[in-house]
Image 1 (tube, rainbow, N blue to C red):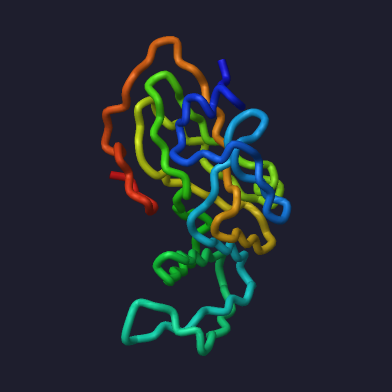
Image 2: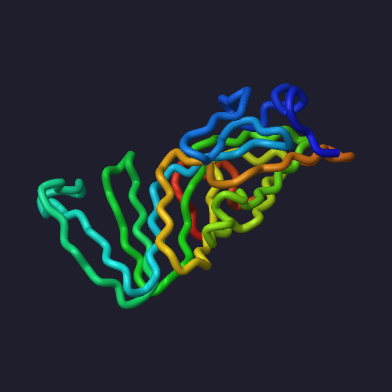
Length: 192
């Protein structure tokens, strides 16, 4: 059975859940008709080969971004720019269409629910896939998202945007997760 609406609010699998759907631009987040749309913590820009990217100049005396200037660079291969607004930092990954990001929401899954992460059609129509991760019953932490870009046009995701939908399923036999990703921190976590 899929748990949604009032039933989902009663179970509270996400700390500080929003009790309704919110729209920023054309992208939704929060409680939806069938599940819950989670948000992305980082800002991510996917660039196809042949694009120009403007890279902020780093302040060599610290890890922060110096906003005085930018360097214009022509990309010879697909690239990704990930910006973390909390840290005031950015990273560029050239020659790839894959990156990790994290959800803003913190999960505290009840032992009787399992969550499955699905693409949002708004992003899928632009060539972005979010891997369909399973959120185990009893799992706690911040979700790491695996993103793959299949498109040929630049796609820009603002931090805080709805990025994926989680559908929650009620389990016949409650269970508790006991694994290496329990209490995952508020940042993308690579494979262990």
